[in-house]
Length: 380
Image (cartoon, rainbow, N blue to C red; front, side):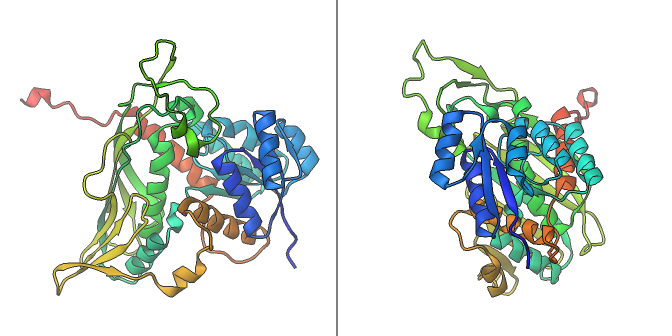
């Protein structure tokens, strides 16, 4: 019989509470939660009936003796916290981004290998039902050899969302850290995990955002947008990270004889044109999924009718999904389930670890250098 694994949560916001729910749902025991603000962490612990709460991470590791730590804070707070957890011998489940740059992320991956602890990296929208359906279809040869894919997302985020970690590169902000990580995870899950090459550019097209006190939960930050943006007493913070990006990659696929070209296009501040979508094109057909993270429905190209045909989700995929509301929450629980099973020695399908977390941070560093342009002025 598998023992009940003990989990310590770092972070008290939407992600921290979501991770706690996810691990409880898969049979683990959430023994403690740690946050920055004493009143906030105490309130969350009481609300969620978590027996231990505190603000000192190292002390919490000693007091709670967890088997797993779950990291649900912004990326800028990850490195030291995860290092201490690995040194303590804990398995680590971390939300994205893993850290703020490729060097520090790679150090965490190497340390985890050295200490022989298991890790999970929660770029977890690869577990969306329609994405898993697309993976089945590509593997079955439904579109022939995959040749290219496109990922289009425009979020039209409010420019006046209060200034915080998402505006700062050093805190793990930016759309590459918090959007591209999911998109690349989806692409590799369907096409193949081996990324051959990458090129891209970024734009910080926001500039500044109002500084507002009292924002503790990422999901409710819109509620704090100032009513009077012309108030002379209002303070402003300068963004130093990208809100839009364009990336192209080549992925190796066991289903194709040539590298598969993938386009990732994201505008954090721009309205969408038609529908955000994901499309996989092949030599014999195509798969179209509505929604920026593959929410669905899913369509395949019907050659006979010369139109897109909606397909229902296969029963095995539906039955395998955690029964919980919310795409993000369901995906967290899916990965937590696989992680716990793996720690307990059960056979599981491949899931992403700090190997991918560190790789993605290194890719983001390359994209942010934005030095891929060829000067052609001399040709004109």
